[in-house]
Amino acid sequence: MKVAIIIPAAGLGTRMRPQPEKSGVSRKQFMLLDGEPILIHTLRKFAGAPSVGEIVIALRPEDRAWVEKGVEAAHISRPIRFVAGGESRQQSVENALLSLAPDTDLVGVHDAVRPFVDAAAIEKVIAEAAETGAAILGVVPVDTVKQVHRNRIRATIPRDRLVMAQTPQVFRYQLLIEAFAAAKTDNFTGTDEASLVERLEKVEVSVVPGSDRNIKITKPTDMELARLFLTEEKAK
View (cartoon, rainbow, N blue to C red):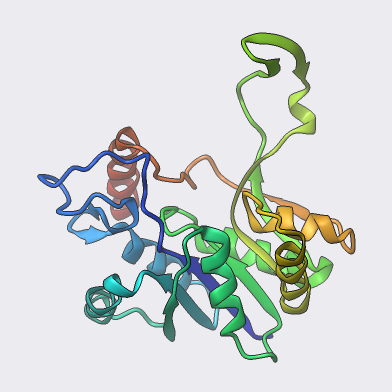
């Protein structure tokens, strides 16, 4: 089974305030965590997953040279290719998707700033997608969720009917190709890849239990938690 992982890393990270004294860069995927960009920590997790073959990173052209050097220095044990990213996550993923060989079986998409996904979860979501055609990691929210209009509550949504979507999200290659083509035709922009696949109404997207540790680093306070998680990982 041929599995490719796409990591969109062309985002500008507008929710992360610059912290040059700590990281040297302001874009979250390149901020330093224990001396290495977050992206490198993320890549190592997929290099440690037996089912993963190729990794494709979508980057802004101006970032490619130094990211390539960083990846080379990190000695990642999986083949890695680089493609030009787009102006949006969806465009970046599509660029990487269209660069894959047509004999690819499964395609996973993972946020560059989720460096704490574990290999077991990666393998489980890949296995589920191989069986059903589409699967994502997700966790049930712990907070009560309210539906509102302006600042007025309209309903309380039962938590057992909700899931917080995580990545990786894994799909059959041809299914994801069709989903992106349909989105382009309809001028539809989704917040994740599953939302594009859902529109096709060809398969039901399965949810594999994720982890509260699989955080998406999007704001400065997340870095403190990331440092704690990394310290715990190294202590194992």
